[in-house]
Image (cartoon, rainbow, N blue to C red; front, side, top):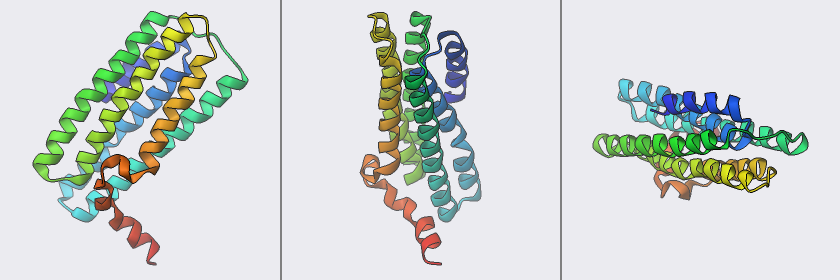
Length: 188
């Protein structure tokens, strides 16, 4: 679902030039890719592999925020017009819907499988659904004649993504299940 969402958002980004949409697109693409390490961990049926997969998810989230943040700062330094505001708003709404569906699927599966990493990933997708609404806000504010809002909203999106990455309480304490690999690395 997120891969399809990201594909549509990529087309709209090419037409609109919105860096807020780019931030959401980069992050949604990274989120779609996180299914790979989680799938491998579940295929291995290993708690250790699941913890490593959880760390891979956190790393993907962090990298997506850094790339999107760089692009937002670049757009502040070198402003460009944002166009096609109606498709831009629609792409943000699609990002909301795609993330919301992903959240439902991941959370239900995580509870059924008793997987802390998958439940945390579902919580993360739910937060991303609200982040995608920032793209809708960007389209609206740019339509009001404030084009600088687009890169500023992109930076806000990056801030939310970094908070998800850096603050374990965002996952309601479930990150404790991911501590194993970190402890293995730091005990060497």
